[in-house]
Amino acid sequence: MRDLENLSSRRVLLVCQDNLGDLVFASAIAAALRDSGDSVSLDVLARPDTGAISRFMPGVERVHAVPSLVAINPLQHWARFRAFLNARKVLAAERYDVVFLVGKNWRLGWLVKLAGIPVRVGYAYPKLKKFLTHAAPLPSRQQPVVPALMTLLEALGETGRSAHYVLDSVKVAAARTQADSLPGQRPGTAGPWVGLHAFAGSPTRCVPLDVWRDFAQALSDAGMQVVWFGVARELQRLRDLDAPGLYGDALGDGSLDSTIGLLANCQAYAGHDSGVLHIASACGLRTLGVFAPGEPHRTFAQGPGGGDTLYRASPSEIDRDTLLHAFSACFPALMAGRQSLSVSATGAPGT
Image (cartoon, rainbow, N blue to C red; front, side):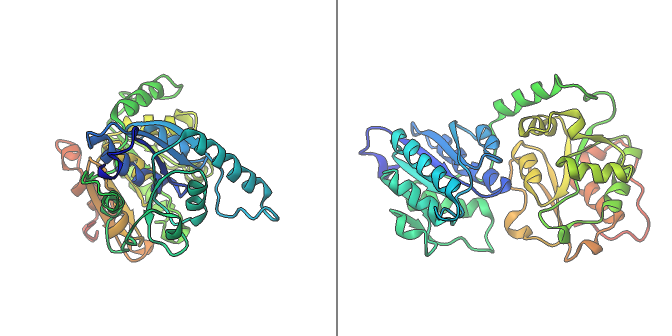
């Protein structure tokens, strides 16, 4: 980092209090810093409910779990304002040299300025930019997220790049080993594991669950072991439909650590645009992302394992056969020598 050459140390803070998927995307910055060759010490500030994923980012040493600071008026949100003051005190004591802010929340910009962090990098959002020392152009809604994040490094004069978001492979392997020690059916008891996640941030973007159930049945009939991922209330809806397969909340303990460990046991993954899709991709899995519609040109899976995207303007345009076509095209090696998936003659192309 050329702007930091005159500083005696390079302590970096990455701030992301957005959703789980956004935090996974932010791991691209951590990967670029790790690969830059600079002796960077990297910490992360995130929400308590998403911060666990930060420990899997490349090179991250410490995670500050701070309640969401979207509203901090002390007259209305005293608990959040107290969290804001406590965070300022903690960050000031850490004496960071530079901070990257990947969201638009101006309160976080104010926080890191009050904490005395001298180099503050973020996007030039109107309310945020007055707290920054280095402002990158606003990200385009037409640009993939990872290249857009690299413009934050460019604003600081950093030439390093990361083409992907990614989780630390050693930490992922450790989570896999830990998941293998948990109760429940383990890999090897059936065919290759295929992770599925049938939910998105909005119900209006979700393919009907009976379609996912029938898709899972076809995979099972072809000799694969379906593993459902999601929170407990989501998985219960699938149980109520008698969807075939194993369930992540029964195999693991419900934590992000066990979710990552179970995903690492999978050989393929298919699911809606969600945080789980991006975790799977960041673990190195090849993925089939289902967008109905979403923003596939911007938030497609951008991990090192690659994959395909299935896009339709509406969930009603995706049926079982559409999913089967797309899955077969995305995972030809997995399908080689295996019983053919049963697709009706009228099934629409999946990609």
